[in-house]
Length: 128
Image 1 (cartoon, rainbow, N blue to C red):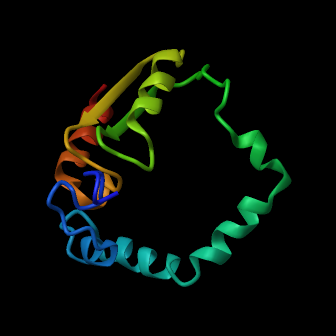
Image 2: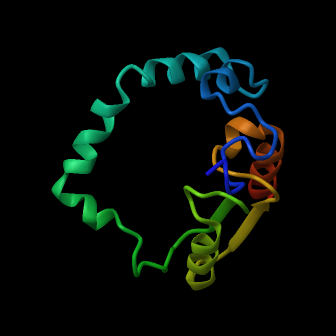
């Protein structure tokens, strides 16, 4: 990913998740404690979900109708939540209100790596 310009640190951010959580001015001590507690065994947390018979039912494939507002915040060079696919999905969404927020030159981990800009979008959504 780094070779082709899509690495997590492409935007100049030192994307060390622990550092970004510990030194993020938008995280409270409770947020940091919750993060540290959640990292004990990530594998054990996600395996039951991955093995669940109902996982397929959680798929968004073919699901575009929402009875509530739909807001999406994406980085335009995110390789994990592919920006182009997210835009295609967004175009098909039917919701009472919908809006796509785009962070330019941003990869994955928007809250951790660019929390002020991300928080600005959250405040915009809250004001809608």
